[in-house]
Structures are given as C-alpha cells and as structure tokens.
Amino acid sequence: MNGGNNVSILDLTAVALGKKIKAGEITAVEATRAALAQIKALEPILNCYVTVDEEGALKRAEEVQKQIEDGILTGPLAGVPVAIKDNMCTEGLLTTCSSKILYNFKPTYTAEAVKNLEAAGAIILGKTNMDEFAMGSTTETSAYGETKNPWNTEHVPGGSSGGSCAAVAANECFFALGSDTGGSIRQPSSFCGVTGIKPTYGTVSRYGLIAYGSSLDQIGPVAKDVTDCATILETIASYDKKDSTSIQREDCDFTSALVDDVKGMHIGIPRDYFGEGLDPEVKDAILKAAKVLEEKGAIVEEFDLSLVEYAIPAYYVIASAEASSNLSRFDGVKYGYRTKEYEGLHNMYKKSRSEGFGPEVKRRIMLGSFVLSSGYYDAYYLKALRTKALIKKAFDQAFEKYDVILGPAAPTTAPKLGESLSDPLQMYLGDIYTISVNLAGLPGMTVPCGKDFKGLPIGLQLIGDCFKEKNIIRAGYAYECSRTYEEPELAKRAEKEAQ
Image 1: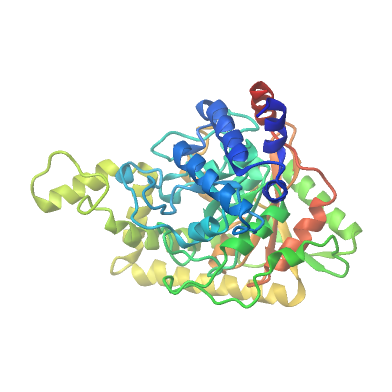
Image 2: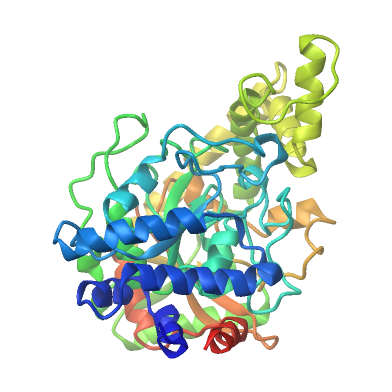
C-alpha cells in the first residue's frame, strides 16, 4: 500500500471510510494499518492510549473484511477502526481505568456498547487514556502519564475522555467511545476540536462501564463530525436488561436528523452562561455560531436559566457520594493491585487502596464518604438531590419554549499542562456549563466553532430535552454545514512523513 493512499485514508470520517470499504476501494486491513502507523508515529508525543492491541486489531480486520466481502456485514461502521475509553470492559483486553489499582485487570466480559460496535463490524485498536476512574477534567490524573493536546502539546486535551478526543483529533483512530459523568465527552471534544455527544441518560447501556457516578454516567461517541456521531449513537444505543437504568426507546433513528434545515427552530441562549469567568474569545465564537443558525432561519433569543450556580456543588456532592460507594469494591481481594506487605485483612485493604488510588480519586472518595456519613447526610447529600430535582425542573421549563439550548462547552480553551492540578477547585469550576446536563439526564453535544488567538479549538455546546437528540443533531449538522473540519498540524505532519 502506498503512502499517498495512507494519507487520504486517515483524513476520512468514519462514515466515509465505511462507504469506501463497502465499495471495495479500501480494505479494513489497510484502514487498520494506517491508524496503527499513525499511533506509532504520535504516541511517544501524545500518549492517547494506555493499551494498543495491534495483533488483535489486524486479526479482527481480516475477519471483518471477509464478512464484508461475503455480504454478512453491511452496516455503515463495518471495517472502521475505533478506540475505546479505558473504563469500558473488553474481554481479555487490559482495562485499567488509568489507575494503578487495576494495572493487571483483564475483564471476562465486554461492555454492551462495545459489543454493539463489534457486532456492527468496528475494529478495536486499543484502550484510551483518561483521568483516573474518570475523575478529572484534564487527563492529568492518569496513573499512566498525561495525554497531550494534539493542537498544542503544552496544553491538556481536557478530560476525563481526553485520550479518546485527542486520538480522534490526531487521526489515531476514526472514532472513539467516551463516557460523560459531568462533561467528560463534551469538554475534551471542545478542547480537541472534535464532535462528541452525551446521549439522554439510559439510551446507551452502562453494563460493563466501570462506574464512577451511576446516576450520571453515560457512554457516547466522539468523532470528526455530526454525521459520524449520529451514526455511532444509532449503533450503540440499545435496551439492555442487564442495566437497570436502560430505557427502551422506540426511536433511535438519529441519522434521519442530519438535514441542513433549522427554519423555525427555537434556540435559547442562557444569559447565566455568559457572565464572568467566560473567556471573551470563547463568548465571541459561540455568539457567532448562534448568528449562523439565526441566518439559517432559527429563532434565537436569550433567557434566564436559574440555579446555574448551584449545579457545581450539587454535582460534586452526588458524584463523590456515588464514587465512594462504587469504588469500595477495589480492595485488593479478588482482582487488581494488592499491597506487598500487610498485617491482617483490614491493613491489607487500607494499604492496597492508599497505594493503588491517586490523590484526586482519594479526594473524591473522602468527600463522598463524608457527605454520606450520619449527621451530614441530610445537610449535604439530600440537599444536593433536592437541588438536582430543581435543576431538572428549570430545564423542563426552558424546553417548554425552546427546542435547543445553546452555550459554551467550557469557559476557556484548553489550559496549559499542570495549571489545573495545582488548584482542584478551579478545575471543578471549569465544569460549569456541562454538569447540569448530567444532573438532569439530558442529551448534549459539542461541535467545533472556531479557535482562539493561540490556535486552540473552541467548542459550541447544544443541549436538548430528554430523548430529543434529534434536535441537537439537526442544529449541530446545520451549523457544521457552514464550516469545514480542521485537523491539527501534528496529525498532518505525521501523515506526510508516513508517505
């Protein structure tokens, strides 16, 4: 295979690649080799992956190619290489949650969302780096080193799905799965200049997703454009009786919303999202994007979305409470890391956990245990649950009037490496625009909408009512039709050198 072909393969979107594979212009093996070559070239710089399964991916690509030729696999993602966030179980393939405590964990089963992708003929390249147990907004809390932003390697890619978003931006895969507990798909998509969707809670099965905050976690797609994301979401969405929060949805035909038409669509812009703390360049890019939709016939107006300032405390109380209970299973007994020397069972638990977990995870476990302890449960945890209900009500009222809520995905572009970790509270405040969506179980999407003076990407966030993904897909697609997808220089250079 010549290098020229290699370049054009990596530039394709997942859906475009799937079409070419189906047409016999490219094979699944060629596509997988191209992605693996890009991984080899860029991983020493970016660190997007914890595990790359070269042998498994090439073997699978050969099987898939044969099934495509035999007419068994006919879907849009057949033969397309994908990266999976390292908190989704993959049978026999290392799954660490980017934590020392799971350094040797090879699951005996595969997460339902990943199974759906495999059934559609997608080829798993490996597992992407993330903030440890998805706790963090920068992918710097990983036990396997930080991931760097492909647009500028001195900056973070965002988090916790930073590895997935950076890998898509750098053409180290054609699409990826991430998980979103408080913005972990949407914020790194914004920082890396890619598109990501967090679907309505319950749309994608959480079976096999290693839990952080069970009432908030949701798996979703990360890709180059809205068409890819809608197609992937259609593939991974399914009712699953193994997940008690899974919802049986009648209508998962998300690709039908890919029309360049927003005439008469009501779009609300919350004034509360444009106050202090928002970078002027981000504000400018978001309002310009709103203008584009308005020029295409949408009705855009500002409104007050109350309770925004209560979202962060409510989120961190609920998420930490759920995390402290979810992470109690990692005790060094059945699997994962166990301390070398200990005296008695209790000491073994204590030492295994204190050596196995990183500082951010310990911080949240302690906070969660505190808010659930007697005497504090009513004062913090119950109050946070009531606040969550009020936030949901505020969104319900907004959606009586608007089809889509439009705003920023993050207050700034990607911060420099090391800046956020020195001030955890500042990092928590960076989630201001994304977490309400998780508290209310709503769908949200980030679409690239410009760059700042440093050349770092800015993302536009579109929020829809429950089960109304089609509204945000339609608005996102219509906006995207007004601009072209941009790749970071780093990705282009690596492709040229492969020629």
